[in-house]
Amino acid sequence: MKIALITDTHYNFRKANKSFHEYFEKFYSQIFFPKLIEENITTVIHLGDAFDNRKGIDYWALKWAKENVYNKFSDLGIKVYNIVGNHDAYYKNTNEVNAIEELLEQYTNVVKISSPKEFKVAGMDFAFLPWICSDNEKEVTNFLENTKAKILFGHLELSGFFAYPGHVHTEGMSKDIFNKFDLVFSGHYHTRSDDGKIFYLGNPYQMFWSDVDDKRGFHIFDTDTNDLKFFENPFTMFEKIYYDEDKIQKIDESFLKDKMIKVIIKNREDHLKFEKFLDKIAKSGPLDLKVIETIDVYDDNVDCEGIESEDTLSILDKYIEESDFELNKNMVKKLLRELYTEALEVE
Image 1 (cartoon, rainbow, N blue to C red):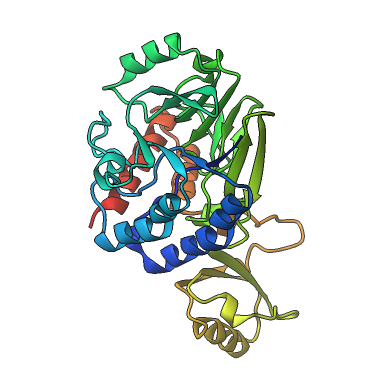
Image 2 (image 1 turned 180 degrees about the vertical axis):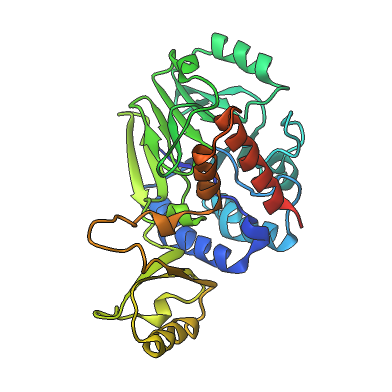
């Protein structure tokens, strides 16, 4: 039997930004659901963070999620095992109140998983772990000790895996806790990485500048062979355009509409020519347009490929790493990431 795996979909992202949700919709209507139909998929496992803001949801975003995702699951007769992730839980210390149970109550085909559970899927025993917090730590420990399942699906924060491109997360639980399992699949980190046994599946689409050039999509897991196949999402939300006056890049303006755009200057002498180039991009209707001035550091011996792709979290992490203080830098980075997430959730 083939099962589709998807995670960290973050409906209601950026306070229900419509341009981002239109971008999400292209993935569902042109990639995800057509592939489920083609592969005769009848079971989907969502590994957490279906919704973005743990404090609430915009009514428009909830309507969007139902019309574009959950109604289609129902119409296709697909059973969904939906794990509660940290963004789905209202409180930080308990999963008791969560978006999956409160917002998706009408869907009888959605199995809502807010506590450790074991289910028989395709004749196999699967273990499911929602977000681990102080309220359920003991329950999780007992569950892991007693479950007979050999395959686990969860929303886990483990050390030693990429949290985002270029950054290995060094905090969190030890992966050794899951040694008894043959395979572990997890959500939470948005970039794909694995150690051959534990697989972080990554989210389906770009959400931040650090996602540029990082493959996104979803997976199909074959329970007969344990084969995990990745299906890439070809659509992008973030685009980098390099401006070199000696070889000006031809721009398809229609391709830039409602996207996040960065123009990186490599060589500029004629300012009027550059302004005309920039005006042409601006008139294409991007969601956001930034100009990155790197003319003073670009040369044949300097690799600046990563400089302009950083998002706020990447910059914060780099700042902490380069700072001279005696505090635990990993703890400081974790605190700043939590504060940044809280700030995004403020209405």
